Length: 358
Ligand SMILES: *Cc1c(COP(=O)(O)O)cnc(C)c1O
Image (cartoon, rainbow, N blue to C red):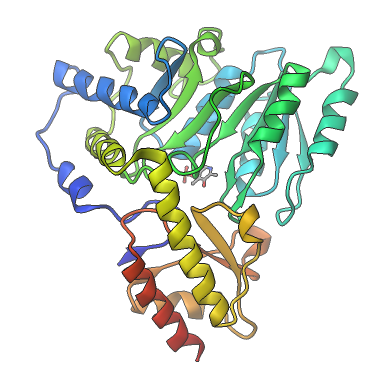
């Protein structure tokens, strides 16, 4: 079965084999060597200076990393503006609500790009006592496949002094992130999307200066404590050791294959192949290619074709696609090209589509 859902991904043989390594006690030096190498390689994906940035690992899915980031980095007196256009932006707002973090939301239409002018106006209109300390946004909104424009949002943050918090869970490793942007404070990401590891470990890349001031709102996901302990070759809880094995091998493979630019090129070619193939069958893309990520694209369900029927027929052919979420469930379906997926696999997928739609 080939997974074309937005994580977990189909594994390479190299990563799959790495899962079956020796049993490891997480209080022994072998585990801390593993933890150290993963943390170093995560920073190396973007050539980040370990004196400025740190990669903090946790045993959780991607949501855990986003929650840990938001709960730790917004101070008690802080105020977050959430620019949202999908399920995952909405989730950041839910996390803020859960922790009683003062926040406002802007955007909201899942099929529209974020409006930088409206966001700028909102930031500027905040009164002196209610300035936004942080702007939070999803880089690649997996709900629709839209790539939000972080460059523009970074400019707004730098102009206003707000810090940028990014959910990069479905973009990290493939889409460009500018860590040179002084407003960019943290990025949350996971092993089992564009990095091609297995579920169970996620991480936050955060400026050391910011994590040093972290607040402690949660017990398990406490980013400050995780960072301090990992710097001391320690860990507060039992990590998902096999997932760590998988992530390390995936990071080695990532580097050997040419790093982020190579992964971006590979995904871009696969995404274009699916888009062109489906267009030839009369299946429309929901978003223009230039507004979409290379990671995942959404397509309009053809008239008269129920998602369930399409899904089941493709699954019988060996492919798992993904439904639209929430109010988009009846409108669209999604195809991700992350993971060990080849052009030949996608040729077979398109033949399968042609047979179903005929
Ligand atoms: C997948 C995803 C997440 C996290 O989902 P989990 O199921 O917790 O791994 C968060 N944000 C975005 C944008 C995602 O695509």
